[in-house]
Image 1 (spheres, rainbow, N blue to C red):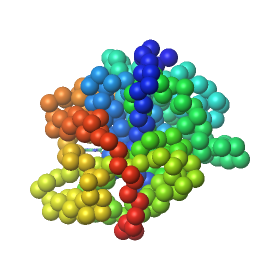
Image 2: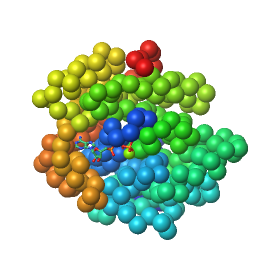
Image 3: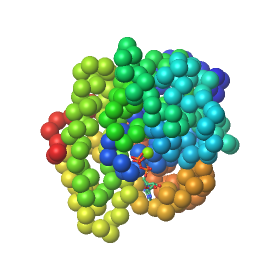
Image 4: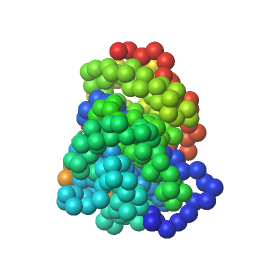
Length: 275
Ligand SMILES: Nc1ncnc2c1ncn2[C@@H]1O[C@H](COP(=O)(O)OP(=O)(O)OP(=O)(O)O)[C@@H](O)[C@H]1O
Ligand SMILES: [Mg+2]
């Protein structure tokens, strides 16, 4: 059982954090947005869909060899509630962890019927018990990300304010479109999040301007700065709000939580994008 509370008719929002480009801030966003929402007293489940398990270790779950994980849920049909953990000291935050086993899932699920919607089906019974489910995707557009997009109500795309930030986004948007068409017609774009922003660099300002040109209002007003506390916090197994509450990183993720919680989701922008 998660939390023990029921949210009745209230809709649970399932948000996928996706970008097949590596190291853009997906996990940092999943952990710290999830924690910031939980601090606003909403029940949150973070799902670690990456075999790297960075969201799990970032929440202090380091010894993951002999625990139930998302792999057991996807491949062995374990119920989600039997794999969910409550990370230390958090009352509203829960984690469905992962470990290296998940590497094998894509291959093991080949030939399994409806393999794209296993996660959606697995999350359904738990959804009434939390208000937000935040899913951290791996840096690929394979079956794990497809499962995530099929399960989600919306997708949040972090982009790093660096060279080639928008490269590859057309592929991601194409995948979102395919999922909308074939698996999940109500998938929307939650928003595009600018991460690791350094306002002293004209490159960062250029990337921000370009993102706004393509995505318009879908770009979050909150921008995540490059901040050392965000990089250090996972080493202590804590979200930044616990590690250094007054840091710029903690403040910005708190602001992002406010934006996400007050947002009405916009239709996905999947039009032409730079390649
Ligand atoms: N705003 C930030 N300021 C400073 N460091 C950051 C920030 N965001 C992320 N990082 C650091 O950058 C690295 C990559 O971030 P993160 O792991 O969140 O990216 P990712 O997209 O999940 O990567 P992957 O594609 O490998 O899953 C990590 O070491 C993280 O601590
Ligand atoms: Mg990651």
